[in-house]
Amino acid sequence: MNAEQIQAWIQAAAILIPAGQATVSTIFALIGQWRGEVLSEEEQNAILEGIKQDATFRQWLALQDAGMGNEPESPVQ
Amino acid sequence: MQRVLYARRVLLSLMVVVLFIVACSVSLKQRAVTTVRTTQATLAAIQDNERAICDPELAKIRPQVPITACVESAVKAGLTTERHQNIAKGLAVAFGLQVKAATALQAWEAGQPPPKELDEMLSTLGSVLKVVQQITPPNSAISKVAADILSVSDQLARLIASLKGESK
Image (cartoon, rainbow over all chains, first blue to last red; front, side, top):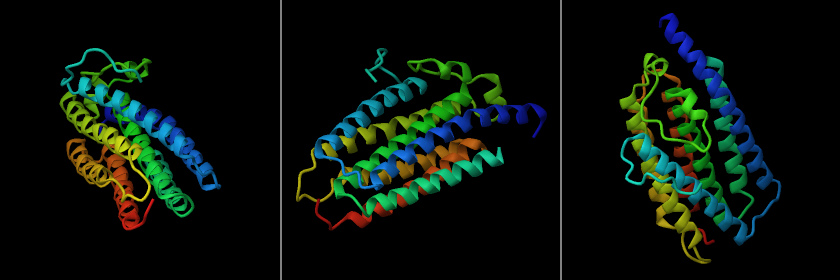
């Protein structure tokens, strides 16, 4: 590995560290559920609706990245 | 880089442990919802990390904009535009499955077995991540992350398998 590649991976590490912090936030959210937080049917469906919206937007973004997007307009995130 | 990868592996392992703890204390549907939510969070992390390496400046823009070509520093590190596009194709399939699984869970009624879309989503997700691993540069941060996610998805699949036969 040459100096330029090492520099590139240092930059990649700088990006991955904040992503790790986001993962910690997710873990704490899950621990909240473990501590006896039972979600109602409505709350569960609201979470699922949020997942659908996020996944729909990210699918659109991935298709655009892949050069396969037919819809130029972004769906509401 | 080794420390970052080690920390990421520890965090992902912790997520799996927490998932199993959650699985022991809440309803079957809530377990499934938690599983799909965790899968969504990990897929989003893969997409964000890969895009940030491909083009760090464009990746910072909010709301997010498409990235159709990788910058020189990414190419030098082994992430070419062609690889970026192939990873994006795999992620598009995975996010489509997430939409399908979430829709099926919303329609899941009491007394019914777990929706088959959940099994389908997890098994196809495993296949997608294997493809992502194959098209990422060997021994790179991205391929190691994909390997970690694959390990997590395998364990999630076992969790779903353990749910079979239970009622909601």
